Length: 318
Picture 1 (cartoon, rainbow, N blue to C red):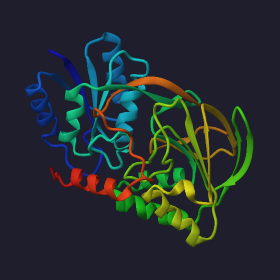
Picture 2 (picture 1 turned 60 degrees about the horizontal axis):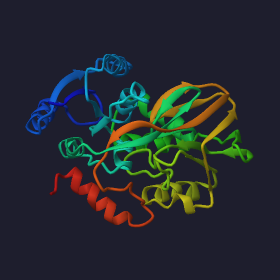
Picture 3 (picture 1 turned 120 degrees about the vertical axis):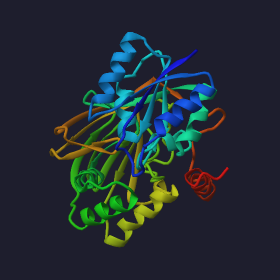
Picture 4 (picture 1 turned 180 degrees about the horizontal axis):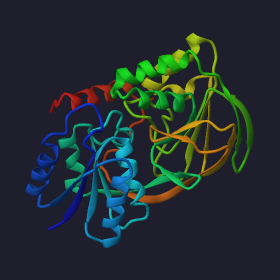
């Protein structure tokens, strides 16, 4: 019988996790999968436990039940591991799960794990530190700092943090060096994206792929208040790549030089990573359970269809 380790973050997202681990274990047991559950006690705990499990070769897979921060902690211990990670979304944004079209309802997300379809996916590093969705500097990092400091989760809290930060943030100068070009830009934000979105269907890099060995580097310039705020509309509809305030590069690696300042990794603030940042894509370095025959969403094609599907998942409509 396959044996999986289930990592549960009890404080991710906005909904109670009471009884969730038991429901997950019962559903997987019916499918012939044995589950050991570990509930995290704080930051870094998931990485430590998963690293122990991977080194001991105790399990056939590790399942991350939480948000993007939990997925990051689990996946950091599984780069180049021989076993896959399964994502059970229960956070606020769930960016990586949404990118690979895993249902945001935790019980429906188990279908991919039970089916056993595994894909070798990319991840990236910044100064040696792994990220799996996005690494950002500038305005979005300042918002992440404020959002974390507020102590409140959920979309409305994030919107409030965004509005407050928007009134005070000023562009920063960046030098971006790639294998083909060096750019000097005064930018509102710079995001380096392995996956297409921050979470909550906010598509910062609508055409990003986690299997192409490349990173989408998104440079956003600030304009007047109205045009800058309309960036948010384009982001939520998957049209950001057509906005004149946005530049996008697609590269396997890059170096970013800037004045020290805040940054975020997979939506979690990480403070100041320094003035010199080396970023690199690691091609095919992470095995992930995916839903069979479902390609990553391309919002430019049919955003309405995708939002209807997301609402159905959230409302448990079948």
